[in-house]
Image (cartoon, rainbow, N blue to C red):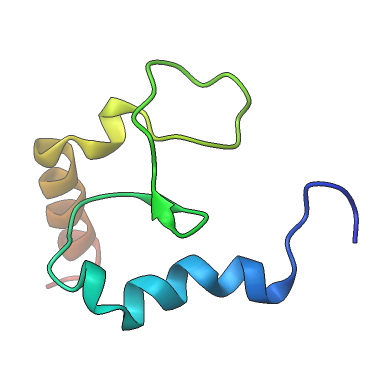
Length: 74
């Protein structure tokens, strides 16, 4: 396996955690990576970890959802 790559099991771990764990049952609107909540960062440095504030903006999320529904004709 090349350096920095994940096995299929490692790659699936966060999705499985979020789908099946009671620990995050009521959690919504957050970003997770490597089976942990992503750290809020001020700027992208390594391109691989953390979440930028704009990605957590609720107004933008609502606008995106509304536009998605419009494009789908719903």
